[in-house]
Image (tube, rainbow, N blue to C red):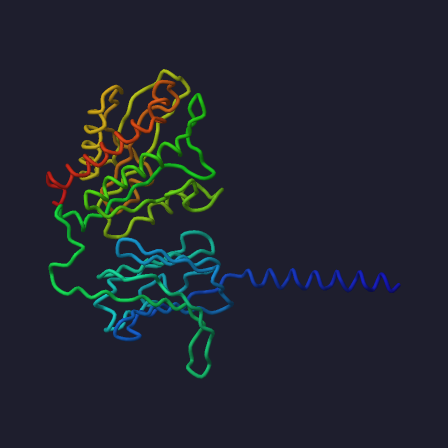
Length: 353
């Protein structure tokens, strides 16, 4: 009888802990964002929330190309997805352009804080509890050091005048999605990443700001999510002021004799069409591969991009000869140079129009 009571007690405790764990997993609702100066050197951004508790593991930040991204797990955007939910105080308006918040995945909020000036150092994150005396909700606090430009001739400018151009490189697939696989096992995701990383170095050396949708063999959103969620996560990597979006892929077909490279743009996208044409011309200069031309298609990353976009197919990884080429470090470097040459031509031949 005593043993039975102990078992029942343990079982009851287990149920209670399970219920408690389920309750703690309930997402909190974000109620407001306020950007203001906490002192002469620090810009503070407070994100208020109700209905639960957040830990540091729920918060991640990334600062690239004048955009401070805040990823909040186990949250609902609530009012902050509307203009009424955000407030930029007068003292912060010289530094903050705008704040955008969206639920990019279930129970996941992505916040983009577009800055007018660069930021020094890291972003300091702290969590503050609700304070009844001050009538404040629990909040996530972000402190960043402001950067003051001494004059108009500041050091971010470079001799190529490309400092203001932002290029987004999107290595196709990754993580749980290998993409197409060649006869000897070379994967599309590995080739796309290798070429994109090489292009990143070349573009950076040419004075561009380069944003990679991924720099490792990972899913950009999460393993197992719907395709549209993964693709939208890639599009979300591009800041609102991005100038070009280039998605890098390898082609595939059941017949191993299929061959050649090709480039794509969204239908009726004039600037995207011009970008795809320049990429096609530069890739064709490498020689050795059949040029399948420039084509229009409704690929998600192109139709949902806010800047001129192109998707390039570097070659058929299912073709034994082209698989060997695509896996070659030397050929990957040539492909990266072709991408860089096309970007340079885009801006040097009227891409600022």
